[in-house]
Length: 383
Image (cartoon, rainbow, N blue to C red; front, top):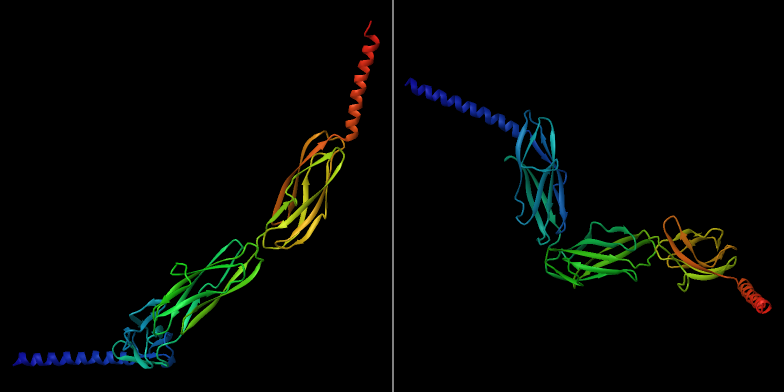
């Protein structure tokens, strides 16, 4: 009998302790609260909704509860993060709060209507959230590119990577187009194979690469290239931008390509030169200079070209004056046209000839010498 009374008393004590723990636990759960300001919103299919959710602990003890989302449609995707991490359980000190981020992706293929799901902390605290899908399905397409602007020279190749999204409820055949300026080339490559059309499944995507090249003679500046994807029922487009910074190149030559001349000692020769801007940027302050033999002179007209547009040619005359004491033979003068950004040089060969007067004088001296020898033979030959 005593043993039975002991057992009864023990069971009552256990029940009292359990009741006390349940009371404390209930108080702790009652102190938790989930809050977000947007509990019902309307969106169209294919959109993403981001919620900022506060878990508030109004209780007297630290709360450490599992965090979950329930009743969300199976075909919908979502992520629940805090502090940049995916979370399943969250601890909150008494009197404080923690913020979670819930991102919900509404699929393209979805019926019109209200969809209610629950954000939960543990099994007791629930926050109902409703998304109203305003229309059924979608009749839209998207052509997006994260990097729409690229910069380079006229010799650069510009590769833009875009994504074509079919947000309709049926498979689409898209014609792919690009409106590039005259002289530009655009290679369109869906799935890395060059083509003029591509097929995208319902609610699917396709990677598209646009390889753009500018003409060699393009001027520095900003160029826009609209691109489109068009099907029978929908279309999408975006605008790509290429910034040509310009190249600095210069070519120096003669109109005929001949780089030699003849001159007499002390004489002058006027040579026509062509300075050509073969780059895509303006050349400023083009100066000309010459490396010349000792005691020779080389002058230029004009001495400097202020501005030379891309693809343009400027004529310059070089006057070469030989040394009076130059002996017959070949001489080289290196002529250079340069700016701070580019330069070009040519080696000009000059052949110095004997002056005509000196030639005749030499002939007369030779004739005189022969005549003198003949006279001497005639006068003294018999002796």
